[in-house]
Length: 478
RNA sequence: CGGGGUGUAGCGUAGCUUGGCUAGCGCGCCUGAUUUGGGAUCAGGAGGUCGCAGGUUCAAAUCCUGUCACCCCGACCA
Image (cartoon, rainbow, N blue to C red; front, side):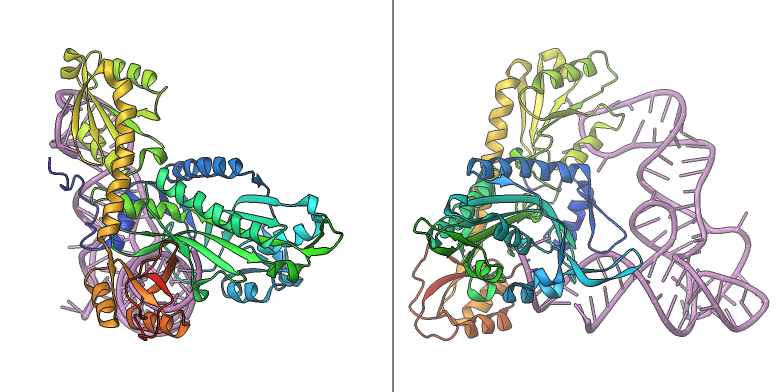
């Protein structure tokens, strides 16, 4: 079968209408449902299982780097939110306010957390006195609320699930090291678990987090050539510490301000998985985050011995992978389509003809390839194939990303490239926000990041042609 | 917040322009039989405050007014 052949009708081709394709996949793969309130999505069991796998691996990485989980309140009094000026200005337009408790109007408005810097800061001010109390390496898993104007499942929702790390350190260097360390944790996670290659770099001042001294980001590229900010890590310096008066006594009995960081990743990652690996037949899940890695489809299951064998295989193979058996009375063809839409990496077909020959058929979701395997070799073959699929997805995503990455040395080239071949554009920049604004005005592209790995595309700024300071990744973003 | 669109059974829709018989169809769902290697077939069955509130009319899914919600595209943001 041709690799690109569409296996399932009822999912719009991504080439025809990418947003519709995305919505179709989310819906047909049973990831979410809409609730009655705009922007508030219901994450269904299959979607939530993916999130749980993401959480589990990330949480392990956080703990390996000595972080502890905590839980902060959902509510923040307005006065607390306002302590850091840039921060409140950045978030005020999109916070949800609680004005009443029961029927009683509150003296002070309370906001539903859009992020928890202020809460962590207040707490840190209380618990940090000595250099012996540092560093504080905290993380919390929770949801936050941002009153977004337009919403889309996973990519932008009013409430979303995430983790937010918040740390406090004795020195500026320690804080900077932590910021970069966690960015690397994110990048490694994306590559190893989600099979998504990312560009690591620093955000420009314009794109920086409200209240941060420096914001670092990992940027990934979707099938349609649009960029997705997939995780951020911020160095706050001692700005919040001054606003919240977080001081400690150092070894020399001198009062010092702490240096802080925060970093976060969200359920948006599921949107990234969909848009990086998905195809016209639906979702394609990297085995590492597939709630079900192998689906067993019995063929002619009413026939003698088929179901028994399928069940025995499920039992045996359940020890080496996440496996399910669909013994419902739907037709085999229906099941094929169903699990392709759901992106399950491997399908194991077992029918009467196979049983006669002591074999089964394995079908790969990523390539469509069907492989006949002896029943005795499944325990070796399945893990090997899952690994191969995981590697292949990363390789394909990397190739696609690279083939959609262009360079430009002047605005005509820049604009033409983005219009004709959407993707990342690498171009030099003078460092002046006026040029950044002009580029956005003209091309709808924003600076994605100043990558750590710099290249010398040309000497002059793509926009004003003055002397260039940085090579920047630009793109239209979600 | 601007522009566009849509609300009729669980989902997708026809009907609306030009008001009129029991609101039609497909998918899904339930029962039974035959099926099962790429979304099976046949037979029977259940399921509707036509988003909501007013108004016009002998008569409203259809016309008018208001309202609510959702979707898409922008601007803002993870």
